[in-house]
Image (cartoon, rainbow over all chains, first blue to last red; front, side, top):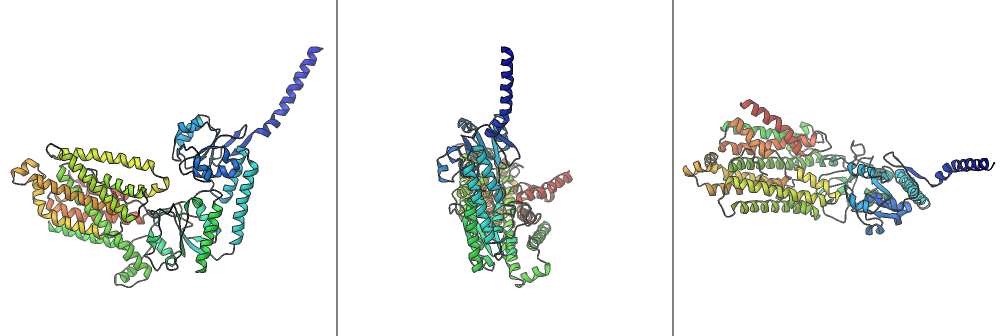
Length: 299
Length: 319
């Protein structure tokens, strides 16, 4: 009698446990799919996050998990709090020992920017990797949301993602009927490089009613000749400036005084890091570029 | 003799015309003719006169400088593998240029710094090879090769420590590219002066090529001649590298090609090297900027792709 009661209790108990398991798991498993297509599930929110690119650092802070970031790489310089992070090398050459010593429970990597061999090694060592690389505005919002799920900061993350989404939508609305204006975006002076419209910079130009003269180039960041720029004769030439350094300048265009961008003095600098990283700062960078194009339209 | 030089000159002229006619933007022959006559649209004038012409002349001068420097080095070191860079000049120039780029300096200072680096490399190798003992070709070669390896290590170190956004510019400089040329005139002038200086020495160089003992026995003052060649070849190389970065291959292969065809007489080989080296680089640069236009290829890829089969064919035929 007693033993039957006992076994019954065990059965009921294990039944309750079995029923509770998925429910329980559903509440605490934190799952997200990364930009490489791999699903990552954490049993509890990440507490020690290593970020292996400047963009990854910035996005993790944007997801509301800045306080949990324990490592960055060279040039992980935004937001300002990130400047005090311990660095684990360059995004192309990670100091694996330094990284492991920081005991991260989540490593945010860069799909095409980090060396695959090192990433494989981290994977083999059992570190949870989450590879990101937003290619669109929605991709930026989306990756912030997914990061916030892994770090348990959904409230802040989803709010920031929505702020970015709304901000971009507002610009798109404002410039929907803007007069199209042709633009050349100079990525680098020597060798002369630009972007096509698959690149986020190209998408920003589009957003502002700019017509990228190299929109349809097959490669994301093609190296091009001066000749074709002169032939395209853009109304505006833009470039990203890095700390006012002299190695990416626009002065070399000024000798072609018949170019319409030069004749109308439409050579503009924008800060390089906000425009070249797929982060919420693209919003300010977009507003900045839209304003520059407005100035050019008025001239 | 003169006939072959005349022939090479004609080919060179043809190459220059082709280079002026072809680019990422199509310009019809009639329009090109209009530009030559001082007419034509302002876009076409800019393209031909401000972009293609200086670039073509710079390519010609650079190719000529490298080939003559290579020919001189091969005589000086009596080693068929010698090229303008074998003694580490390009390494010194590269370290100079990369330092300037790392410091965020502008194009003019990058060129200046490259030239200073090349000169430093030259003095360094010369001083070290001189040492306390005698000054022999093999000692010079060994010193140069070791110093070149040292420069190579410094370059790798600098690339490793450089912020990634500056890397494309640096790597393209290291590969060499005529688009760096700001003006062709210094390079052309140095090339002409060098030919003027070296031609009277050519007969003695023929003797030196047979070995220093024999040259001395025949009344050539070997030491001063060797110093002159070393200095001259270094200046030519430094000018070439300063104009267009370290473009490989031209200096090694062009003199050999010409020897296979014209025989080993420096009186012919040296001016022929200037013409053929210039032509090769002009053609290679024209292809580099048009093959996948409007995208651009590094010119070093094309010089090798053009030069390797030509050289192998000549070598095969000569046996």
